[in-house]
Length: 284
Image (cartoon, rainbow, N blue to C red; front, side, top):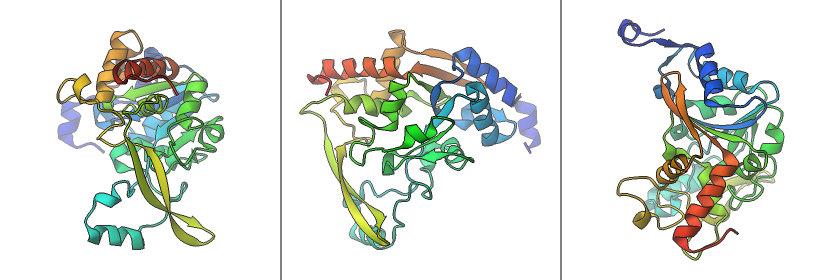
């Protein structure tokens, strides 16, 4: 229940309000929708995160599928850079990755974990790039995610594009446009930064550390973006803004949140061209 000062300062945001906003923005019934959410931007939502998920599912209808990037709550992605004591603690006692049991990365906000634990949810095997989905195409979306380049071909992101899906930034900043990692995966370039990391999995009842090769999806970035974006601006924010200025995407309000809706395929194709023009490479 909200405190009195909140009641005096804010207006309640209800399920029907959110659904109207989603439909006005252009969310299509029956589509696959990938959502990024910043709950605080929505205002005071009556029913909290449950209402947000229910609103998204209502806007999509019974034939639609909802997807979110959930990641891994305590992944060891940068383990090799940590002090020896930390490396030892994680190598000896970090629970092995379990696509169904391992919680979502809390930095993704409240909605991904809500979707991951929702009745009927399906979860991919993509360790640090794990996705969760709800709806009739959830099984297809999350099946057979590749271990290496889990955002590349055959990934849930690739399938989202294949299915003419949409990407919704529900109050979330453009720098969190995860699908742009799929665009990065489609551009072969000697300038693309490669990484190697390890994580534990359970095999035949034992814990084994698996080595993975991928391109850098951390804050360092897959490409040397620095000369091509203004200082202090995230590269994905710059690409997202450029796409909006070129007519790819639509802005609108959902609840109190400034939101953006993209068609996944056109956004990825725009991003691939943007990357090729700056890093001298062609689509893979």
